[in-house]
Length: 96
Image (cartoon, rainbow, N blue to C red; front, side, top):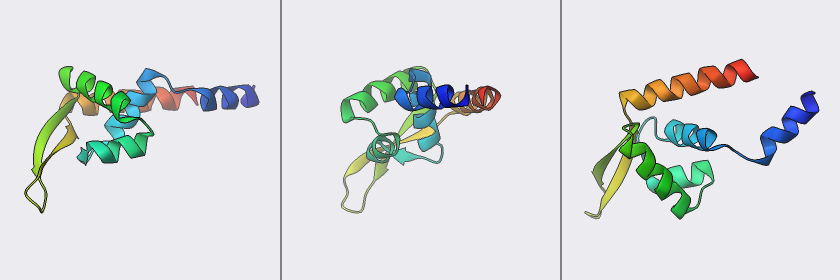
């Protein structure tokens, strides 16, 4: 049984797993590129997930100034996002 569950976990991530990964990556505030590389997502995939998470109030988008006066977006967890991440972590712990 342990071998079967191990194989299943390596095949695909669910949407909930991807959202959990994104929220974890953005927990201390992160740029889109940082989240994209940390979660192994394409720019298109990440954009869709970020829009979804921001619309539902799990992430907040904040402008950030860089050294050369360009403006970048930083994404950070909201209280609702922290609650989701905690519930997700608790559920994941129960399944292991």
